[in-house]
Amino acid sequence: MILTFLSKLKARETFEESLDISPYAKMMGFRLRRQDGILTTVMDFHDDLIGSPFPKALHGGTVASLLEMAALMQLTWDRELAHIPKALDVTIDYLRSGKPEDTFARARVFRMGRRFATLHAEAWQSDSEKPIASAMLHFQLVK
Image (cartoon, rainbow, N blue to C red; front, top):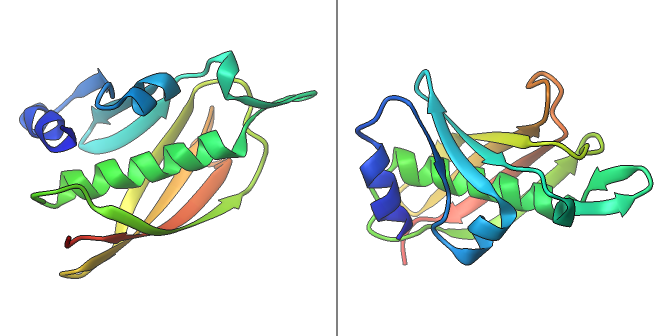
């Protein structure tokens, strides 16, 4: 389903599409955006994402999920794969509290082999120069 979804978007230089590829992605409010050749995953804010009511802050698991989805989308976008890569290891560094607003994430392939890929992802909110979290992710490319 993800592969079909992305293959339809590859022909378009600019887009913003809801990631309704799974019930989980839909519930989280994920969107995929491409502008100026850069792929960005967006998590629309809604109250269910709050982990701390005082002060209001995003739950760390929602930020981790966004980072993993951004990495998966980037890896699948960059590499013509016959199946979905499997996440083997995710290391998250929480840098600051996530405010109750839309959150953005981008990933880049750090190292690509025949069997494994390593990606780095960052999440931010109003200023991309001030990330709220970063992650190093390892994916298995072969079944």
